[in-house]
Length: 224
Image (tube, rainbow, N blue to C red; front, side, top):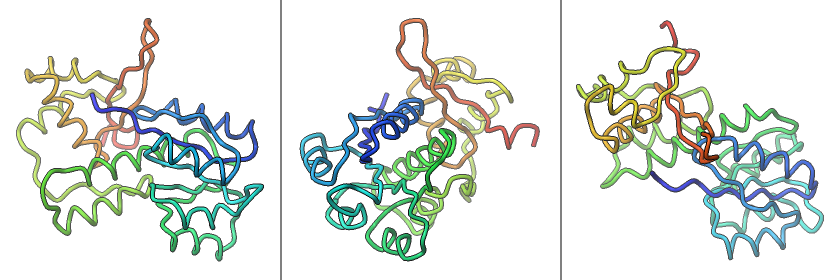
Protein backbone atom coordinates (compact mmCIF):
# COMPACT_ATOMS: atom_id res chain seq x y z
CA UNK A 1 0.00 0.00 0.00
CA UNK A 2 1.37 3.47 -0.86
CA UNK A 3 2.65 5.58 2.01
CA UNK A 4 0.37 8.28 3.38
CA UNK A 5 0.81 11.87 2.23
CA UNK A 6 2.55 13.77 5.04
CA UNK A 7 0.88 17.11 5.76
CA UNK A 8 2.37 20.07 7.64
CA UNK A 9 -0.09 22.59 9.11
CA UNK A 10 1.20 26.15 9.58
CA UNK A 11 -1.12 28.16 11.86
CA UNK A 12 -0.33 30.31 14.89
CA UNK A 13 -3.58 29.34 16.67
CA UNK A 14 -2.68 26.12 18.48
CA UNK A 15 -6.29 24.99 18.96
CA UNK A 16 -7.20 25.61 15.32
CA UNK A 17 -4.05 23.80 14.14
CA UNK A 18 -4.84 20.83 16.40
CA UNK A 19 -8.39 20.66 15.02
CA UNK A 20 -7.14 20.80 11.43
CA UNK A 21 -4.60 18.06 12.20
CA UNK A 22 -7.45 15.85 13.43
CA UNK A 23 -9.32 16.58 10.18
CA UNK A 24 -6.25 15.54 8.16
CA UNK A 25 -5.75 12.32 10.11
CA UNK A 26 -9.37 11.33 9.46
CA UNK A 27 -8.83 11.26 5.68
CA UNK A 28 -7.64 8.04 4.10
CA UNK A 29 -4.08 8.32 2.82
CA UNK A 30 -3.09 11.40 4.82
CA UNK A 31 -1.08 11.89 8.01
CA UNK A 32 -0.68 15.19 9.88
CA UNK A 33 2.77 16.14 11.11
CA UNK A 34 3.15 18.21 14.29
CA UNK A 35 1.78 21.68 13.44
CA UNK A 36 3.98 24.78 13.61
CA UNK A 37 2.94 28.34 14.38
CA UNK A 38 5.30 30.65 12.50
CA UNK A 39 7.00 31.14 9.15
CA UNK A 40 10.46 30.48 10.58
CA UNK A 41 9.36 27.22 12.20
CA UNK A 42 7.62 26.24 8.97
CA UNK A 43 10.83 26.62 6.98
CA UNK A 44 12.70 24.48 9.53
CA UNK A 45 10.03 21.80 9.53
CA UNK A 46 9.82 21.67 5.74
CA UNK A 47 13.60 21.32 5.52
CA UNK A 48 13.80 18.54 8.12
CA UNK A 49 10.52 16.65 7.61
CA UNK A 50 10.00 17.01 3.85
CA UNK A 51 6.18 17.04 3.88
CA UNK A 52 4.22 16.25 0.74
CA UNK A 53 1.73 19.04 1.37
CA UNK A 54 1.61 22.23 3.45
CA UNK A 55 -1.64 23.74 4.74
CA UNK A 56 -0.70 27.39 5.20
CA UNK A 57 -2.41 30.30 6.94
CA UNK A 58 -1.92 33.85 5.65
CA UNK A 59 -1.72 35.55 9.05
CA UNK A 60 1.44 34.45 10.87
CA UNK A 61 3.24 36.30 13.70
CA UNK A 62 6.57 36.75 11.90
CA UNK A 63 5.59 36.97 8.22
CA UNK A 64 2.70 36.83 5.81
CA UNK A 65 1.91 33.32 4.63
CA UNK A 66 1.72 34.76 1.13
CA UNK A 67 5.35 35.89 1.38
CA UNK A 68 6.33 32.50 2.82
CA UNK A 69 4.53 30.76 -0.05
CA UNK A 70 6.88 32.46 -2.47
CA UNK A 71 9.82 30.68 -0.77
CA UNK A 72 8.36 27.17 -0.64
CA UNK A 73 9.20 24.34 -3.01
CA UNK A 74 6.40 22.08 -1.82
CA UNK A 75 2.74 21.64 -2.74
CA UNK A 76 0.69 24.12 -0.70
CA UNK A 77 -2.97 24.80 -0.03
CA UNK A 78 -3.95 28.02 1.73
CA UNK A 79 -6.31 27.84 4.73
CA UNK A 80 -7.16 31.38 5.74
CA UNK A 81 -9.78 33.95 6.70
CA UNK A 82 -8.23 36.36 4.17
CA UNK A 83 -10.98 36.64 1.57
CA UNK A 84 -9.97 39.63 -0.53
CA UNK A 85 -9.30 39.21 -4.21
CA UNK A 86 -5.75 40.55 -3.99
CA UNK A 87 -4.75 37.84 -1.51
CA UNK A 88 -6.34 35.11 -3.60
CA UNK A 89 -4.71 36.27 -6.83
CA UNK A 90 -1.35 36.51 -5.10
CA UNK A 91 -1.73 33.04 -3.58
CA UNK A 92 -2.48 31.42 -6.93
CA UNK A 93 0.20 33.45 -8.72
CA UNK A 94 2.76 32.19 -6.20
CA UNK A 95 1.77 28.57 -6.66
CA UNK A 96 -1.01 27.66 -4.21
CA UNK A 97 -2.93 24.59 -5.42
CA UNK A 98 -6.06 25.53 -3.49
CA UNK A 99 -7.59 28.10 -1.13
CA UNK A 100 -10.05 27.20 1.62
CA UNK A 101 -11.73 29.94 3.66
CA UNK A 102 -11.82 29.67 7.45
CA UNK A 103 -13.82 28.52 9.22
CA UNK A 104 -14.53 25.31 7.34
CA UNK A 105 -15.85 21.87 8.19
CA UNK A 106 -13.89 18.65 8.35
CA UNK A 107 -15.75 17.49 5.25
CA UNK A 108 -14.66 20.57 3.29
CA UNK A 109 -11.02 19.90 4.07
CA UNK A 110 -11.52 16.19 3.39
CA UNK A 111 -12.83 16.99 -0.09
CA UNK A 112 -9.85 19.25 -0.73
CA UNK A 113 -7.40 16.57 0.39
CA UNK A 114 -9.08 13.86 -1.66
CA UNK A 115 -8.87 16.18 -4.68
CA UNK A 116 -5.15 16.61 -4.00
CA UNK A 117 -4.71 12.82 -3.79
CA UNK A 118 -6.38 12.43 -7.19
CA UNK A 119 -4.08 15.11 -8.61
CA UNK A 120 -0.99 13.30 -7.31
CA UNK A 121 -2.13 9.90 -8.56
CA UNK A 122 -2.82 11.26 -12.05
CA UNK A 123 0.59 12.95 -12.30
CA UNK A 124 2.41 9.94 -10.81
CA UNK A 125 1.64 7.84 -13.89
CA UNK A 126 4.70 6.33 -15.50
CA UNK A 127 5.97 7.66 -18.81
CA UNK A 128 5.14 10.82 -20.74
CA UNK A 129 1.75 12.41 -20.08
CA UNK A 130 -0.58 13.67 -22.78
CA UNK A 131 -2.60 16.89 -22.80
CA UNK A 132 -5.81 15.13 -21.74
CA UNK A 133 -4.04 13.87 -18.62
CA UNK A 134 -2.75 17.35 -17.83
CA UNK A 135 -6.27 18.79 -18.10
CA UNK A 136 -7.68 15.97 -15.97
CA UNK A 137 -5.05 16.66 -13.29
CA UNK A 138 -5.97 20.36 -13.24
CA UNK A 139 -9.70 19.56 -12.95
CA UNK A 140 -9.04 17.05 -10.20
CA UNK A 141 -7.84 19.82 -7.87
CA UNK A 142 -11.36 21.27 -7.74
CA UNK A 143 -13.44 19.26 -5.24
CA UNK A 144 -16.65 17.97 -6.80
CA UNK A 145 -15.58 18.92 -10.33
CA UNK A 146 -14.02 15.64 -11.47
CA UNK A 147 -15.00 14.82 -15.02
CA UNK A 148 -14.95 11.16 -16.09
CA UNK A 149 -12.05 10.16 -18.27
CA UNK A 150 -12.77 9.94 -21.98
CA UNK A 151 -10.90 6.65 -22.14
CA UNK A 152 -13.11 3.53 -22.28
CA UNK A 153 -12.97 1.26 -19.25
CA UNK A 154 -11.24 -2.10 -19.57
CA UNK A 155 -13.20 -5.26 -18.74
CA UNK A 156 -11.36 -5.60 -15.42
CA UNK A 157 -11.90 -1.97 -14.45
CA UNK A 158 -15.61 -2.28 -15.27
CA UNK A 159 -15.83 -5.48 -13.21
CA UNK A 160 -14.18 -3.75 -10.24
CA UNK A 161 -16.68 -0.88 -10.46
CA UNK A 162 -19.65 -3.24 -10.81
CA UNK A 163 -18.53 -5.19 -7.73
CA UNK A 164 -19.24 -2.14 -5.53
CA UNK A 165 -22.79 -2.07 -4.23
CA UNK A 166 -24.32 1.37 -3.53
CA UNK A 167 -24.25 2.25 0.14
CA UNK A 168 -21.53 -0.31 0.95
CA UNK A 169 -17.80 0.10 1.58
CA UNK A 170 -15.20 -2.55 0.69
CA UNK A 171 -11.50 -3.13 1.28
CA UNK A 172 -9.22 -3.78 -1.69
CA UNK A 173 -8.93 -7.42 -0.58
CA UNK A 174 -12.72 -7.80 -0.55
CA UNK A 175 -13.01 -6.27 -4.02
CA UNK A 176 -10.25 -8.58 -5.26
CA UNK A 177 -12.14 -11.61 -3.96
CA UNK A 178 -15.41 -10.45 -5.52
CA UNK A 179 -13.82 -9.87 -8.93
CA UNK A 180 -11.33 -12.76 -8.90
CA UNK A 181 -8.13 -10.73 -9.27
CA UNK A 182 -5.11 -10.10 -7.04
CA UNK A 183 -5.29 -7.50 -4.30
CA UNK A 184 -2.64 -5.40 -6.06
CA UNK A 185 -4.68 -5.42 -9.27
CA UNK A 186 -7.85 -4.43 -7.43
CA UNK A 187 -5.93 -1.65 -5.64
CA UNK A 188 -4.61 -0.30 -8.95
CA UNK A 189 -8.03 -0.19 -10.59
CA UNK A 190 -9.71 1.28 -7.50
CA UNK A 191 -7.14 4.10 -7.48
CA UNK A 192 -7.81 4.75 -11.17
CA UNK A 193 -11.56 4.85 -10.54
CA UNK A 194 -10.99 7.24 -7.64
CA UNK A 195 -9.06 9.53 -10.01
CA UNK A 196 -12.20 9.76 -12.18
CA UNK A 197 -14.48 10.36 -9.21
CA UNK A 198 -16.31 7.08 -9.85
CA UNK A 199 -15.11 5.69 -6.48
CA UNK A 200 -14.54 7.40 -3.14
CA UNK A 201 -11.99 6.37 -0.51
CA UNK A 202 -12.71 6.43 3.21
CA UNK A 203 -10.73 5.47 6.27
CA UNK A 204 -11.90 2.95 8.87
CA UNK A 205 -10.09 1.86 12.01
CA UNK A 206 -10.25 -1.85 12.82
CA UNK A 207 -10.03 -3.57 16.19
CA UNK A 208 -6.23 -3.35 16.13
CA UNK A 209 -6.37 0.41 15.61
CA UNK A 210 -4.69 0.20 12.21
CA UNK A 211 -6.53 2.26 9.57
CA UNK A 212 -7.95 0.51 6.52
CA UNK A 213 -8.88 2.08 3.22
CA UNK A 214 -12.48 1.40 2.21
CA UNK A 215 -13.90 1.96 -1.27
CA UNK A 216 -17.42 2.74 -2.33
CA UNK A 217 -19.64 4.55 -4.81
CA UNK A 218 -19.96 8.30 -4.01
CA UNK A 219 -23.35 9.24 -2.60
CA UNK A 220 -24.11 11.49 -5.54
CA UNK A 221 -23.65 8.62 -7.97
CA UNK A 222 -25.70 6.02 -6.11
CA UNK A 223 -28.82 5.06 -7.97
CA UNK A 224 -27.66 6.89 -11.12
